[in-house]
Image (cartoon, rainbow, N blue to C red; front, side, top):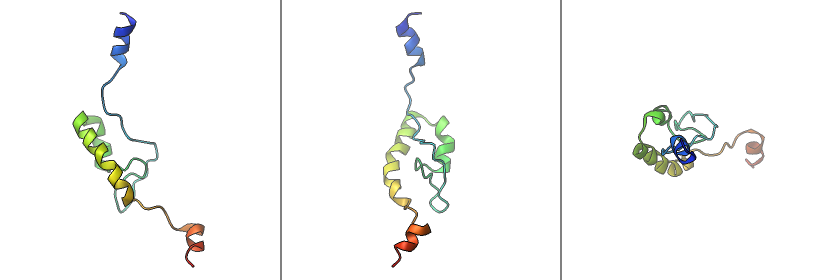
Length: 81
């Protein structure tokens, strides 16, 4: 087996996961705070085809606004005035 054939065996043509390893599901929105996918999308990712994965990826930017930054804690109290 030559180098070209060996490299072709390891090359995969699939849509990579958007996971950034910040896996926290927002309790009201039901979205992961790291990648903005739903639990269902995360669970089904490994069995999704390329088109389905691309469809999920296309929706992620519009979901970012649904998760607001936390306003509590010390900073939130200081800004209340």
